[in-house]
Length: 95
Image 1 (tube, rainbow, N blue to C red):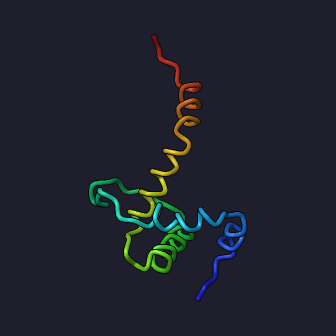
Image 2 (image 1 turned 30 degrees about the vertical axis):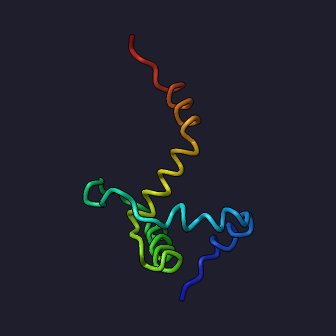
C-alpha cells in the first residue's frame, strides 16, 4: 500500500476539533448528483488521493463527487468575502 507523505505533514498542524469535524463536514452525501454537474479534469495524483480518502476515511460510503462538492462548498463559504472583494476589484462594469 502506498503512503502519502503530504498527508502526514498536514496532519501535524490540525487541531483536535478539526479532526473530529472533518468526516462530518466533508465525507457526507450531498443533495445533488454527479450527473447533474459538469466534467472537470484534475491531476492524476489528486484523483488517487481523493479516491484513497473516500475509500479509507469515508469507508466507501461517499462518492468522490460528494467529497469534492463538500470541499468546494466549504471553501466558498469560508472565503466568499475575499473572493467577492477580489472579483469586484478586477471586474469593472462597462457603464
